[in-house]
Length: 307
Length: 295
Image 1: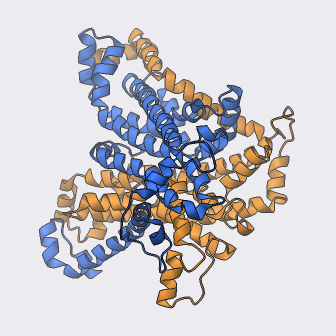
Image 2: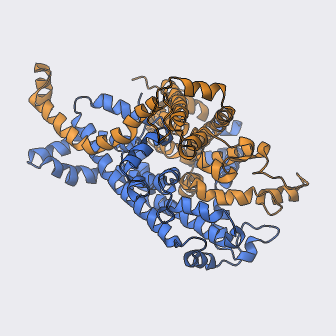
Image 3: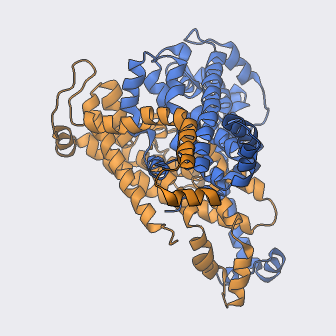
């Protein structure tokens, strides 16, 4: 190591440095080829396409910001999808995030049964949204046979069965509940690992210094120590929260009654792969990109580590 | 709340001191766990319910007389299409298996190259990959479709595999883990005259095992459950994967008669990810310890 450092001081590019760079990039080549092809270039292609009227058949023509203008000024369905996505994201993202942290925090305090609790809590994250929708459709079935209707009728909360998935007013909240369910474990594993990794001597030392209770511990030791994990959890939960699609379409259908479950991704799918209007759909994709990216950046700022 | 506040770190003392707070916390946890577990319990039970129980009024969550006939129906019946259900299972296993397998090698090699050689430009590269964590695959879906279409891969297994090998999330996990591997072991191997590939394969890969086991779990879960890719790239019945096939099965005419099969298919679609997670849980926890982002 010493040798390398010395050589580095001598000139900008040493022999050793060059070798390391070559071998390093050799190992990275397969990943980089695929990453550049299917992630990096596509971002710029999507940006470019969003300024065109490409429809798969004719060659794309440049239309400037027309797509964006139409989206915001003329496309009421898009505005509905934007409103729905924001509502879903705002309710599911933070709920899943905080429930995950709360659960991880409690589980690390437990002596017994950690594994079973962890699994029961994390299992929803492992399931397929489409597969689970067959169960949701029975739980929220509009007749007396639906689990929820049956339960509520028995309790006497309602007198008539409610058309949960057909009535636009209820549908929205059904999707929220299901998405919250699906988002429960986001970040959970990261938090659990982070909590288990905090040096217990820190707590001991704090106690000696007069730390009074568990909430002070949480505030002054646990949370600051866990910033990197909290950030990783936040970034994944933002991405997930804005990407609600599978569940919404398989429970509510497409288009959903009164577009009550129409999300940005559903709008993107509709224009890209049903109407084949790739240019317009790309502008929808860019708006999704900009939103998640800005919120992701905010997360980076909030959870920055000061070292 | 008072009672929670006086909790101390050691479990035994906590139990004696704060009965009430402890009970409240356990109730809170149980409520959360019920919320997460109940739909799953219903799902498992319905797969084993005979048809008369499925349509019983009032509806039951717990199965009374469990039967395997739903699975037999599902696997035997060809229903509307001529594609047997086993074909969908095969499609899912094949595409998910190959994707996970390739993703492990590509991500591990890449992360190893970046973390252990620190080639020039690696900091920028890693910043770009971290930024890619911040947008969903939907954003790049249209260009990806154009690429896959251009390569003539629509309706092929490669359409479901190729775009999903190099995932920022996977790379990120392995890289964070690789970062803490001691350089000394790798240096020692090099001094022994081992070739770079040999060092990677015989020394780094075994050391990275917790990381790539975790990657295997996450990659399996996301690809197995992936519905959008199949929806976009596949329109031939015989090439569909489980989520898409299940959706076809669960909708349309004659669905009432099929509800037993739907229950069985739902369980078959859901169970593999849960089983794999249970098996690998230890490895996953070991890796997630290093997964934080320092900004």
